[in-house]
Length: 348
Image 1 (tube, one colour):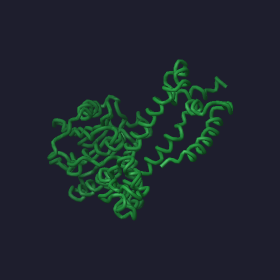
Image 2 (cartoon, one colour):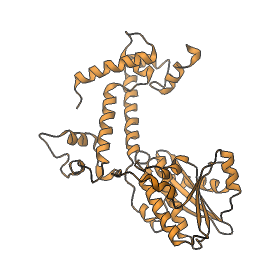
Image 3 (cartoon, one colour):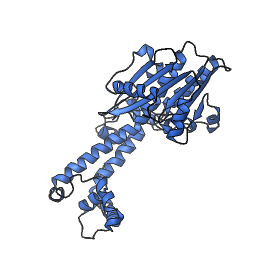
Image 4 (tube, one colour):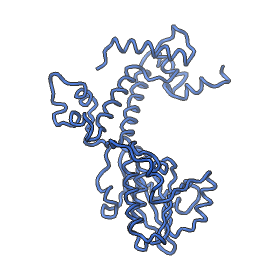
């Protein structure tokens, strides 16, 4: 997979780049330059590229010409004349059946102006708080998500004057398989489900989300990881708009500044900690789309592998003679902090 000659040539090119970044001497050691410039050594960088290519193969949709080759049952059983695809899949152990697939066709952008709900994003946090405090909608839904101790989860709170709060929790699993953006959309899906189960639903609703990127996903082509959740949200919202009285029903998704003293945000922030710890509402009370575990997120797989490579690099560097001597000067090497410190104008 990695020819030594190719690695040597690529390392030479990388060293030239590290010299340009750090302004070091031509006689400087390559491993030292990589640490100073925070450049992943070439063997690890090639491993990163190979893993990225493998994951992209595993996420191909069923209509792609390579889908059958990647998903055949005999992958890993070939002992002679292995193809590059087979070698990659065996090396990194990617099970394509557990990885989410990207759609083969992009979403029609003309549908962005035909969303079944209104979107409101305030210009500042102060404006967002002011809008929430003076909201006239009868039912307000607040959502919060979090990632703690390597786990991700979300909680949704429905508030209606004179009624007890209605709360749903969802625990997606480890951070190595799911991202914060993904759990954000999962929380919005819970919010849509609460609206659909509201008995007196012919009224006005607001769904507060503290992440602008999650809201703007509805105006995109939806071909990124996690966007399958956004498509499910739109589908439920379309169903609700058809079932409800159009003169009385209205749904607005707006950006709410998180942790700013709002009652709904406080309650959601308290409940999300329970979701991160592993609490999930009983399946009959969840939307059918979340009854089964979600497929592994592409971005989470890449991030977990990159973190593993960074740890291996740090361990290898600190075991070398240079690393042991250098660690007395900077304990965090290799680290981005060292690159930022060396780029300060006061040092030049």
